[in-house]
Length: 95
Image 1: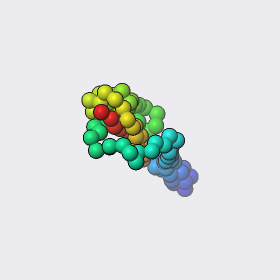
Image 2: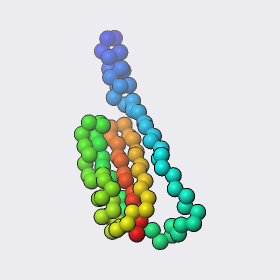
Image 3: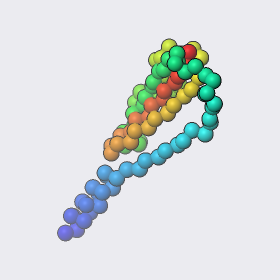
């Protein structure tokens, strides 16, 4: 009986996760801007168990290089949390 309780608690701890959301604090008025000609580039990093990583280049500079962007206009950050790993992506928009 003891091993079943410990096993159930260990399983619950292992599969539980947490999610965070960090909203953007900077806002820009884009009503007069032409956003149709912007290029975009993305760079992602993967973390295993939130302890090991990042595996990959997760930076604004890498995202700008991936999209061949010389002048950055906007930056987006996206985080996907899964049970055993998470992925953080930076997307850069610009010219």
